[in-house]
Amino acid sequence: MLALLAPIVVFGLVIFVHELGHFIAAKLSGVYAPRFSIGFGPALFRYRRGETEYVLAALPLGGYVRMASRHDAEASFIEGGGEGEGEGLKPGQKGYDPEAMLPFGPKPVPEHRWFESKSLAARLFIMIAGVTMNILLAFVVLTGLSLVYGQPVVGTRVVGAVRPLATAPALTGLQAGDTIVAVNGAPVRNWTEIADRIDETGAGTVVVRTNRGDTRIPVGTPGSPTTQQLLGAVDFFIAPVLGDVLPGSPAKRGGLLIGDSIVTIAGQPVQSWSQLQERVSPAAGTDLPFVVRRGGALVTLTIRPDSTSVKDATTGAMRNVGKIGAAVADPTTREPIGVGAAVVAGARGTWITAGKIVETVRGLITREVSVRQLGGPIAITRASVAAAQSGLESLLFLIALLSVNVAVLNLLPIPILDGGQILINIAESVKGSPFSARTREYVLRFGLVAILLIFVMSTFNDLVMGFKDVVAKLFG
Image (cartoon, rainbow, N blue to C red):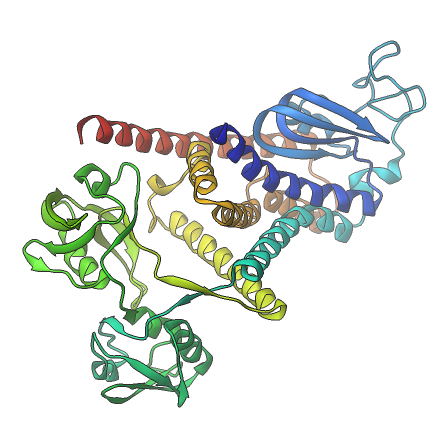
């Protein structure tokens, strides 16, 4: 039951909110919207209220709001059924209303209620409303999570590792094991405050006081690192204890379990998560002997890290590193915060999430990120079930994450998506006349093919990952 309900709740809510944005904007703009559908294809459930029919369709891969348009014929092959003259219900058919407009009755739709009759500003407002609602959903969810559960705080002040930066030679003044007591003269209680103080510096000099003395590091000026590069170069201490093992990963295949504490890798002691990364990163495709502490006993395992292309946190360059597909145990605790701070945290979380998705899309376009990392409906289903099993907080966070994903991806310039439709409308406005029906149909079909290719590719990745997981369970 959980496997069925969790994906419906997660994906269904995100799609519903997106289409609700389009629907509300269309109503506010005076555009006739005869159908609000969640899903595509044959209707499983339909209910008409006022001049709109609400539909739950068989293919739960998205949704749409059908609007009165002179381009009805081009869209009908995707959405199912036209709304133009001759396409509506006939007298005697179920749902026929002699007083209603097409497609429910015989009355034609007034031209002033067509989508194309509205100004460019009104059309853009309708098209951007879905994305806006998704961003708003993520903001509300993340704000609520911060208010209810508190702000995540990394409780340590101990430095775990320092990576050299060519633009910051002063970093040699910091060492693993140092305890940071103040930043820019302000005492700090945890790593969250350390990161905030450094980030607030902007351009200038960060003064980091440790138990051994002061280290002065120029940031934000020509020839010096940004505050984000500095934060990427200095890690906080985390014990090498596994908090998660990904399905089908080298860690899973090699026998690592959640809760394992890493003692040695290739005979070298591991005292922090940073040291684990230092041992694994250069060993892609190489068998590494692990000794882990499990339930008071020492267990020896062999793990072969996969080669993965990642962006270097300090230089920004892409490089291949070894990854075992395991995550550290959550080092954060929660501190209660007020409404104002929760709103700021919600906005910041939404902005950061959107930025990461944009960066991933850019990496896919420039081939810095492999298409093998794309996840599809199976991955969403598995993530939804896992989140539901972890609790309400994880499920809500996944909803926020997926909602931002839908918002960003819908702005891609693919004709069938909002971003593509925005470009088409702007292009027609610049051109001074609409594109021909044949041109629009070809463009729309191109967009559909592009979306189908992405869907097939992501689903294939899901199946490959599932196959690896099954093999690991049978033979690992």
